[in-house]
Length: 350
Image 1: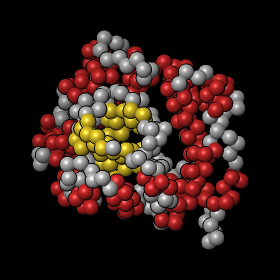
Image 2 (image 1 turned 90 degrees about the vertical axis):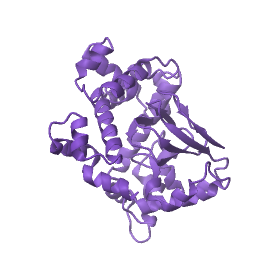
Image 3 (image 1 turned 180 degrees about the horizontal axis):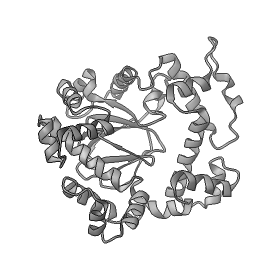
Image 4 (image 1 turned 60 degrees about the vertical axis):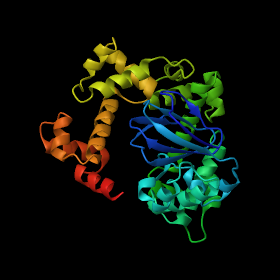
């Protein structure tokens, strides 16, 4: 099923089957499984059953396709689209000529296998882990085991079957290519699943701890607070997805309107009739990001829009309130990984 729509701000969209979200236009932040991401225009995001997505802006236009059959995703070379280990599994359509041709139609064609085939080829071309196809299969074999066994007694012996005849060690390979140990990936999986159960169900904290592989609820509480800064109960109260209030929308509207002139936290605290401490705490609980990060994201988003419109770096810097163009260039590179000049070149060539 193909659907083009404007997502509601701060609404939780649960994923019930393999789904592709093509961000056609819009700026701001999206959230998937409690992680926030920015700059997703002209990208295709692949999500699988059990995940969720939220949009922290009301100007997104999204094309969504749900795949009726999961059989195509049982192929090992395709599963990488839906099981990214570090961030989202996505395809940058601006870097994919086949994708551009496919998307030149008003809607996706009925042959949904075509976009999967194109996307998987593009994903391997992007090669986010700088690995061979053979190495990717080992990495995602490990991820499959974690997905299936995270709630049980997972040990290093469970990886013995993942040793290749040529001597690859699965744990060493994951650490080298992904940047995290298998144990860390397992801990991250348990924490993410516990967050979902806390946020989206009424199960007791004790039940959640047992169901996500923690045998001691007290230990689970300590791990959860050390990682998130909140107790499980505080996290549940702060997320409160069923009773959305106007806080998120009001804050986002303030940021969009004032981020060029005002970047001090006390300005936004005054507008929201809260102390800086209370606003910071509520922002972190509601949006899983600091207020400073949200302000910075708006500045970066505006700078990218202006650079894409072929404004000079000097003009962009002054429009954003930087006294010197080199100060803006340093800021931009620090948070995007590219200089403004490199960004303009990439946009021009895309």
